[in-house]
Image 1 (cartoon, rainbow, N blue to C red):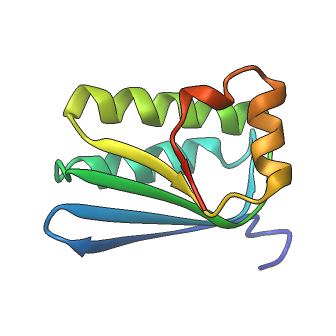
Image 2: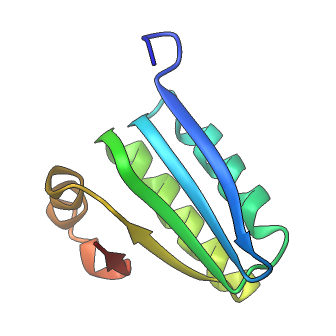
Length: 108
């Protein structure tokens, strides 16, 4: 990944009821729209579970947090259970510093 490709997203349909959205790079003002689009597309199949995999996420700013809030609201509307998995401590810290870390379900 280089500066011209700051975010890579891969949507994987794990099975008929589960979708994993793998996010690599930086989730910020420049990339939040792409993230929101990919999550909305993943939710369009109405999976029971949507896992947002932040294992390889390097950076997240307030725009990324806003995009995650939009994602969880979209999931609730469609009846999809959303969980953030694999987030490094520095990513979780951003969410908790913003006072919304407890609004998300986190898994190792």
